[in-house]
Length: 395
Image (cartoon, one colour):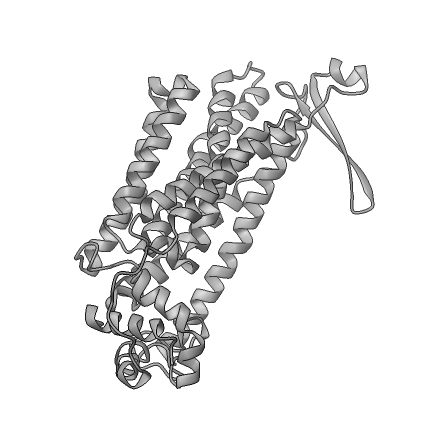
């Protein structure tokens, strides 16, 4: 059986699984944050006497629900407790397998850009793993250090670290690979927060209750700190998961700045939603997030085109498409590793090419992200020739 065919199906299954478990994890996370921020003092004084700190009533799916949260723990633990952790762990597992398939197995296409940094496949993979591991280790050290005692200072240092990471990634990998790795780094931090801090703290709480001890409050405080970080990382991570569709951003000269601006916008919007749950939303926070998005769009506008020469005819540009584009974008691709044209884009006939002239110009000339990793060795003169053809109306 064709290896490219198997890779496509493996890609599909892993991506589907990653999406499913990711939705389960983020959905549960968002729900519990909403739940925590909507708690009210219990209606029944007897519940307060039993140590219940808050409750919330809801209606959904034709039924009424009530959820209660104890100030510390109930007098007696029930025979069964539901834990929320496997959604996070399986998100990391499926995500890493997908990373291996798309960005490691296909490093020449998705991860390496010789115009950014000349790397061989194993160098790129090694640097990728180092970023993911070092990202967690440094973040965890910050949280456990004296800086972690002050939320404002810690938040500033984490933001600064994210800025340095975004700059470094965009100067090592292709724009597409850099954006994905920025999100993967944050995603790894989120999952390991669950594995090393949040769940162990919860286990200690349960153990203390079983042994009749008073739980140490530090575990709850650490877990809450990491949970807050996780919720503000969520929207930037979700953006990077879809960012490979937007070459105008990751292929931009200032791609790392755009990445940080969208990440800040996502964090601000998430802050506003959390405030809204509590009923004290600040419209300025939402406005700041939306303004940041607008500024990102303005900054990503195509730069004024320099004088690229006279308009070119299709007869002049057709050999370039045949040599540089059609190896991948054909009904039956000839480029190794491609069993079907990427995204179903076929550039074989003149009508097919003309219909996508604007997209081709953006990908080949404006952002220079195609061909990926310059697999087909397109030259600067050939890129300019395509731009000249589009300038003349793609006739």
